[in-house]
Amino acid sequence: MGKAGKVWIVGAGPGDPGLLTVRGRQVLQRADVILFDRLVNPVILTWAREGAELIDVGKQPGGRRTDQSVICSLMVRKARQGFRVVRLKGGDPFVFGRGGEESIKLAQNRIPFEVVPGVTSGLAVPAVAGIPVTHRGVSTEVALRIGAQAKGSVEGKTMVGYMSAEGLGAFLHEALEGGFKRSTPVAIIQQGTLPSQKAFFSTVGNLLKDGERLRIKPPAIVVVGQVVSLRHEIGRQWRGKLSRQRVVLTVSSVLAKRWRGVFEEEGAEVWGIPMTQIDEIAPSKRLLADLDQSNWIALTSGAGVRALVHAVGDLRKLAAKKIAVVGPSTAQICRQHGLGVDFVGPGPGAISLARNWPGEKNEAVLHCTGSAEEGVLQTHLTRRGFSVRRIVLYRNNAPARPPGVILNQLKTDGADWIVFASGSAAERFQRLMGRTWAKKIKVAVIGDSTDRVARKAGWKVLAKAKDVSARAVLSAILKAP
Image (cartoon, rainbow, N blue to C red; front, side, top):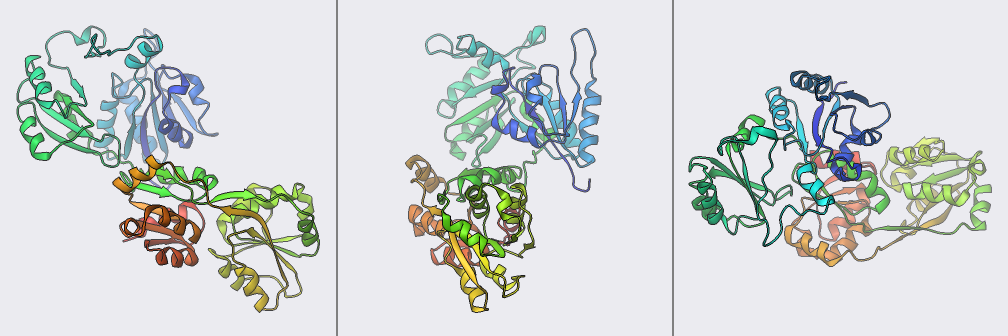
C-alpha cells in the first residue's frame, strides 16, 4: 500500500459491547488490522469489516503471553505497510493498560497514532452493581490501584482533580499535604476532548500563580504526578488534517450519515445540521408513461436515483433505457442500487451535464429530479433541439428548526467550516444564523450554482468541490487558503 498507515489505541470498555464508545466503533469498522487483548469481548470483533486481519495478542494468566515488545513491533510494522491498525484493549488504554508504553513506542518510530479512550472498569463495574464511587457527604475521592504495586509513598502515583479550576488552591494544598513535592509536574486541561481544548503545564508550587495569569476557566481537569512529564515522550497524537476543527454539514440527513466518517477520520468534530429534507413523492401513472416515451433518463442527484428506484419498484422497467448522470458520485449511487450507467458527466451541476450530453437529438430525455431544481437541464437541452421531459420525484423541503441549544452554542463558539451542497441550504442557514455571523465562517460549496447563491447570501466561500461527494469536499477544504 502506498499511503502511510496509522494506529488507533482504542479502549474497548469493561466488557459489555454496548459500552464501547461511538468513536471506538467507528475506527474499528474501518481498520485493516486489529490487535486485541484477552479482556476484549469477542462480540466486539464481529463489528470489524470483512477481510480485516484479527491478531490475538492477549496475555493468559499462567498461560500463553504475547511479549509487549512483540505487540509494539507488530503495530509499527503494520502501520509502515500502510494499514489502518487498531490496538484494541480492555477498559481504558491509559488506565493500567500499558497504552502509554505503546504510544511512546509509536512516537519514537514516527508512526501517526490516536488514543480513543474507553470506559474504565474501575468506575463502570461498581456503577452497574449500584455502587457510586463518589457520593456527596460520603466519598469525595477515588483511588485506582493495581494489585500490590500501589503500596508505598506518593512516588509512582497520580492525583487527578475534577472541575478543580475553581478550587485550584485547595486542591494543590491537598497534593502537598499528601506528599507531592512543589516541583512535581502538573497539567491542567480545559475543555478536554473538544476543539477548544487547552492544556497548561506547571508544577505544584507554581500552578496557582500561573493559573491566575492564564485565566483558566472550568470545566477543567488537573493531573499531578510524574506521568505529566511523559507527554514529551508520547508527543502529539495525529488525529488528522482537520484536528480540533468543527465542520458543520448542512446536507440531508441521508448524506450526512455517509459523509460524517470521512471528516471524522481527519480529526474533525462534525455537526450535522441538515438544511434540506428529502420527501419522496408517491409514484404516479405519468412516470410510467414518460418512461415509455423516453430513450434516456437523466439523473442529477443521489436523491433522484433513490426516488426513481423506489417509484419504479421493478428495475426491469428500466432495462431498455440509457442512463446519464451528473458525476461520479451519482454514478456510484446508481450502481449501489443495481442501475447501470451509460454516461457519467464531469459534474457538478446540470449545466455541465447539458453541455456534455451524449445522446442524439432524436432520442427523448426524461429528467428525474427534485422540486428545488429549476429546470436548468431541460432548458439547455431544449435550446439545443432535444426533446426533454422533467418529472419531480421528490421535494426539497426545509427541515424542522434545529434545537435552540444547538444554534446558541454554534453562535457562541462558531465553526471552522460550513458545507453547503445547494443554494437553498446556504440561504436557509443564513436566515437561521444571520449575515454578520456568516461573514466570519469559512464555507465549502459544491458547484458553481451553490457558490453564487452562497456568496450572495453573505457566506465567505473559500473552497469549491467539483463532485457531490465527501471526498471531493474534503479535498477542496484541505487545498483552501
